[in-house]
Amino acid sequence: MTVNVLLIACGALGREIVELTRLNNWDHFKIQCLPAELHNRPEKIPAAVRAEIEDKREDYDHIFVAYADCGTGGSLDTVLAEYGIDRLPGAHCYEFFAGSTAFNALADTEPGTFYLTDFLTRHFGRLVRTGLGLDKHPELMPQYFGNYKRLVYLAQSDSPDLAAKAEQHADYLGLDYERVYTGLGNVGHEFSEKVIQWQN
Image (cartoon, rainbow, N blue to C red; front, side, top):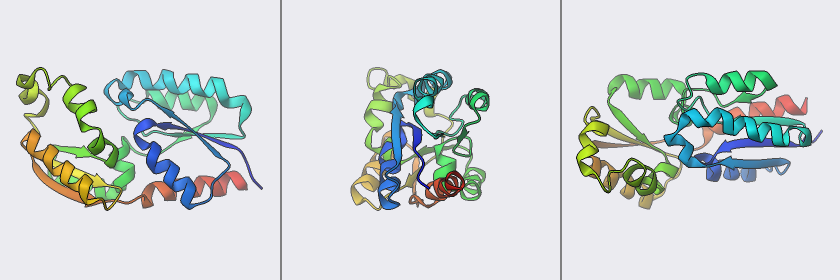
């Protein structure tokens, strides 16, 4: 049985979610991405997600939210509980890309770690340099990154170009660099379980 599903997704995950739906022939999924800039204003995420749910819920059999908690302090879960809607597991996208066990091991090894994904590596200038005002006020660097020791690039792809960019970003921030390949396996597993549930 085919069901119509709306995925309300963080814009930072758009490319990966489109790739997952393509690889799995999930052509009954409609993807609606919210602005990735909400990463810098997580308090606005619950209201933005609620607005999409209210606008679209009559048009779909199921809605799934492709966000983790993402710094909302549980407020996103409060909204989703009102509608009986699930989201991706974990505190943030780094955890569900890497998987909880692997991410916790990384965090335990070096708590002062700044993480990048493919998306954040591509858009580092807009979201970090400009988004945090470092382009105009480089003196703010110690306030933002003074307690970090390491940058870990959680790579969803095997792109040498992205790996090189991530290492450049680590140099810019003055952090040690490490690349960890995650692929899309963990996120794909979460979606696959939901697809089976919806079809039953």
